[in-house]
Image (cartoon, rainbow, N blue to C red; front, side):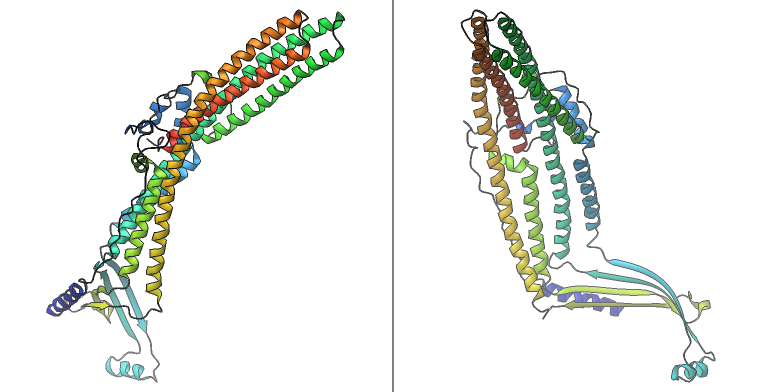
Length: 470
């Protein structure tokens, strides 16, 4: 027992001597951020992204769709399974500082040649032609974490778990945004369908009037043909819209993890409510909130730990091994205590000297990878700021476009009424009526599209700022 203590003391003293060597220090990377987002008037610290998705999307039908998506979307479920796997690895990493212990039981019978020295010795001393050996042994191995290698391995497990967690949040923001975009696109198609059906009624009325005038001999058959062609064109548009609506319903069903089916909805696009006074907040808060940026930052932290491990591999390693148990060459006195007890302890320090430059290469590669991750982190921040800026300018521009488009629709609807009155009074030809109807239809379809684009820009801004995972 005294010898074992001496070995342990000598090993620990030697380990303490090498622990005075310097450790690698890595600076924290700070992204370059503007004080405010472009196209914002003031640097308001509040942000719409701080709202939970239920507070942001107040349409009950959309809320129900998003809730289904969060629960059933397969991409999100896969991401959550990855989080669970990483959590198991994180739990295992907490035990890395503990020694490895194994237990074994073995029995062996050997029969040497009678003409061998061993065979003759056995017969001479033991009076038998075989030898037995029975063992019960515990083996222990432990490495002192002098250079923080184990600590860095635990840190890697921690940040990898956090990466999967942030990745799942990023996927949820994408799923929430995609469902909202699909829903608003569906409302736009509904609006365009209503516009097309309304315009179809106008086209049919124009066709009826034109046929009556033609029968009265006041116009040619060309006018009837043009009016009929206009009606058929609108009917074709309705068929195309029906197809697009069905495809969009299928896409939304798949997003929420269900078989393709109809999506019930009771409101029009003009009734959908989203926050109108939008505040983006400050870029620094966006970076800390946005999951994909946080994930990239965690990748950088992981590379820091990998550099630390590569550095530690170049330093001496302090290892202690021990084993003990019971051993006997006869099974009947195998467990006689203390006669059958045995044990040994070995402590040593190993310093790598020549590894064909492998350790230095590993360290340099780890440092280069860290530099790559620094660039990737900064690029992710830059992309995030750009996405927010794009959403802000799109929202402001589309707000102005919606006003102009609404004015255009009003003007062209008045033009249809004027053209119809003039046509019935013989002061305008059929081409003017058809042109007025076509222009009005296109203007209303365009207005519906602009409204949907503006709703989409608000959703894009919410996602770009890191909203949707709460």
